[in-house]
Length: 90
Figure 1 (cartoon, rainbow, N blue to C red):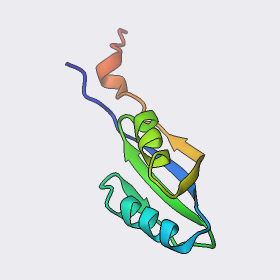
Figure 2: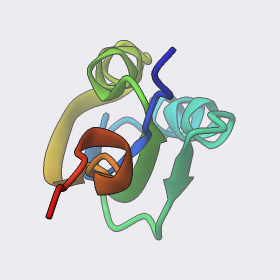
Figure 3: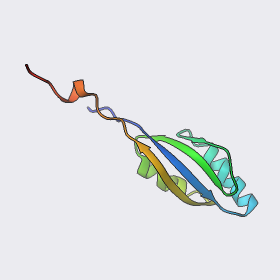
């Protein structure tokens, strides 16, 4: 069975402008084990997502009440190890 590789995604999460809704969203985001949050700037917070299934994670994050939008800034996927995918003959 093939090992599942995780990827890193840099995100900007736009939060609701209403303070209590924004605070609740921040709490929910902070509870995610696959997400590291940066410093809040206005209604935006940078985050790094480490996930083998980023599409599902994006949908889950966008579904959090108080999250208005998730912008993907950068995605890094791990390439398969060449020694496992090809054999060179000389």
